[in-house]
Amino acid sequence: GKNVDANLVLGGEPSRESFAVSLLKSRPRLTFVSSGSFRLNDTLFDDVRDWVVVDKRAVDTLTNYSTLVDEFKRRNIRYVQVITSSYHLRRARLLGQIVLGSRGISSSYLASDLYSTQPSASQESTLKCTRDVLRALVWVACEVDGRFLSSTLQILKSVDFTNL
Image (cartoon, rainbow, N blue to C red):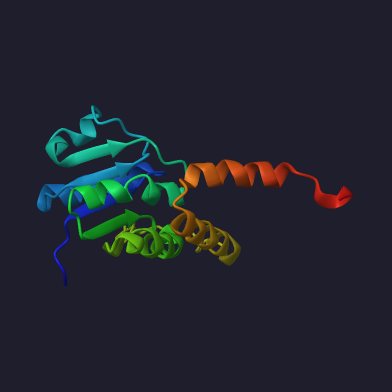
């Protein structure tokens, strides 16, 4: 396959980050950790700190991508390997292909619990996927930051349209 230029770890579960670190030890490459629970000074990163960039801006899966895609472009990163949990892969792949693809960046997807003996949680709902795909398409179309969209959706959720 193509040469991977960087890893992107979608924060949210410590197991994703520890998986990425074990991967880094055998195959060092630039790795972005988007809004994970670890700080860069965490001892977890001791041997691989030089390879890791921690970015705290993302608030959800869409912003995992939208906050970093221009940074990838600036660094001339053309191929990103995305690391997340197996139950999250479908939505992560859909959003990654839209947002990264909008900048001509290719991507592949790796489950951090690939070798886990635990039965994986079932996939996320189609509704959740569809909602996020629509948000991603709006982001691409309008170039608005996903965080703006996220707060707009929160506002809309709280609006009572029944009395219109």
